[in-house]
Amino acid sequence: MATVYSGFDTRLDRVVAVKVMHSTLADDEAFVARFVREARSAARLQHPNVVAIFDQGEDHGRVFLVMELVGGRTLRAVLRERVRLDAGQALGVMEGLLTALAAAHDAGIVHRDVKPENVLVADSGLVKVADFGLARAIESSQHTVADGTLIGTVAYLAPEQVVSGAADARTDLYSAGVLLYEMLTGLVPFTGDTPLNVAYQHVNDDVPPPSAVQLDVPPSVDDIVLTATRRESADRYPDAHAMLTAVRRARNDYADSLGTTAQHTAVVRLDDAPTTVISLGRADRLGAARRGEPASPSRRRRRRTPLVVAIVVGVILGSVGAVGWWLGSGRYDDAPRFERLTQAQAETRARSLGVSLRIKEPSPFSETVPRGTVIDQDPEPGDRYRRGSTITVTISRGQDRVVIPDVLGKTEAEATALLEAQGLQVVPAPREYNREVPEGSVVEQVPGPSTARGTKRGSSVTLVVSKGPEPVTVPNVEGRPRGDAEAAVADAGLLSKVVQVFDDDVPTGIVISQNRPAGTTASRGDTLTLTVSKGPELVVVPDVGGKDRADAQSALDAAGLKARFIEFPGRRGKRVYDQDPSGGERVRRGSTVTCYLV
Image (cartoon, rainbow, N blue to C red; front, side, top):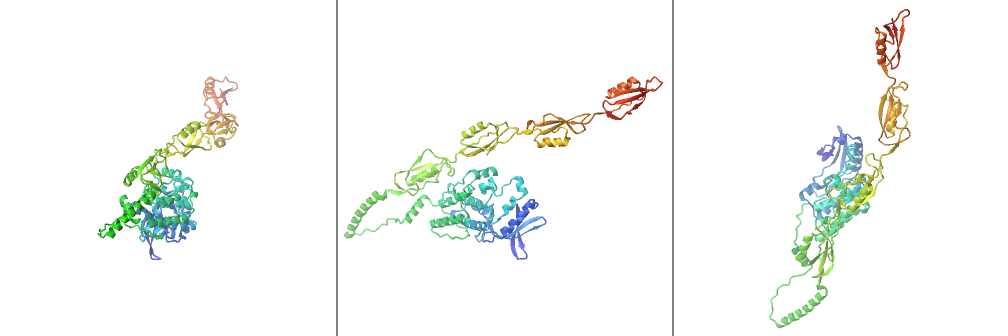
């Protein structure tokens, strides 16, 4: 929608960014008016985590913004280079983003297009958000309305933006939750062959927890993503302040787990050393060290008898204590975590820990846990269990997807039976008149037939059923001028067909008759035939001068005219020496031509 240049402000002696909108938008008066209003509103938003707007103007038909030039990279560039961030880094970016959103929402400004391209990480580490209000200006564009474009990159669209185009502060929180998911996993939650397919998933599917892809994501961070991306906006965080509080709490917990202290600033460092991967064996040893379980050091034996006696007594007392400990709590341990592991990973870990694993049948479906991944375990992670006993795990069968059949043209009963057989719910819609589809048959289904991916079992399919052709009343147009008659027929929902005939009594262009009686019922789109007068039929009078009486009679008969012969007094007329009307004149068919004979 725009091209961004580096520019120099000669008045204030500073380097700036100049965003010049493309000419297709600059030619749109509605867009320009909204663009100016949104620029003024966004310019009032002065915050360290918001890219400042210094000026706005127009030059030779191009509208532009003058903005703060931020040295650094977009978050998209960071992710392209690093693929994903660890939880601490991702939460640091979110803290800066949400700080900016909270300030904007307090000022009554909704971003509407939160995505990695609009989040900048300055060289100082400061997180800044750009393009507040620009998406709202784009929405007013006639170009956007005409081609049905969805504002906002489709991967980050909230369900309400897809369904109705509505957006509020919680819409920005949904996009922020998707952004956090992408930072943690390197992936967006929904992908598809077309933008419409991705938008459909936002409306009908829940965003899965990022730990389903990356096992090292803490549960508290999972909770942030899942709460922010609830499909119903009322179920999300009430505002950016509440989500920011949850992010800071999770950042504290993550720092505590690493033995560090979280610095709650909107600055994030992305040049840390890569995360070290610790094997299970090493992790167990680290855990033992943290629990204060020292190894038994070897000691020199001393030959003094009192020491030997003391050792023997100590061994006996220690053995008694160990037996008591074993009979009491020593037989028990904390259940290890198998949740979020694939079945193969869970079995490998169980063997390494000496745990007996049992797979619970039947396996359930899950919308959030991938197929073949542990969805539940008994006992739960951290619960006490007796060593040597069995831990039961439940393996997810993945998403329960079914194929939506094509029911267009089928009767309502047939369509309902086919859809319900697939485990889908049928939602009736108001019936519509339709000339092509018989009454009682399906005109439209929403959504349409499934792609190969299928749709969630239990989803709703809306059926629009035909009411057949719409009945209309035939108007009375006899005696009306042709133009008025055709307009009246069109207003009644009918097509008109005109047949023109000669008529001696009805003036030219007037409707003589119609093939359907006025006041009767027809179907919308039917054809009404109108018979329109061409006026009386005119013929050319033949020139019969010089012809004898018989030939003149024949010529006039052939022209559809009547002959009247008048002889010159005192002569026996044989030839026509004059006629009235003259030859070549046009008269009504059946008129009389007077011929004078000599």
